[in-house]
Length: 151
Image 1 (cartoon, one colour):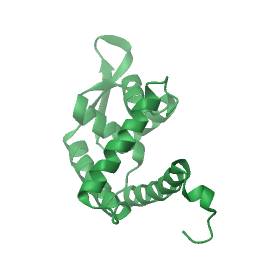
Image 2: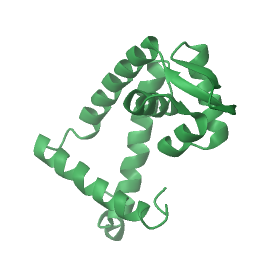
Image 3: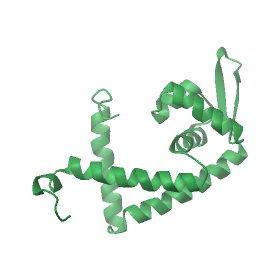
């Protein structure tokens, strides 16, 4: 890290920010090549793991703004990755369900993210990667319990 002030490179917040920019670019490039977006991955992952959900539930689970959920779900419907149907239990709500094609797309996106993780974390051993993931999860969980400040 030549030519970067020492007081920056010793700050975890600065390092995390720099790495985040790099990670975001890698993920975006990978998803673009797969004809997808990050919102698509979040929504498909939530539907696959938790089952059918309303758009509002998806927004909360995936931390996506309501209008962005509507747009992303619309894109996923057009591509045949999800079905959006009226919720029989609530007239004004839609129920979103992942399709077989959506499960396949999620698998392709998982492969993209696996490659990104390998590229991003190349300098770390498998044990160091697990430690980093655990520590980042702990820091994030701490801030989320403080009222969502880490969102």
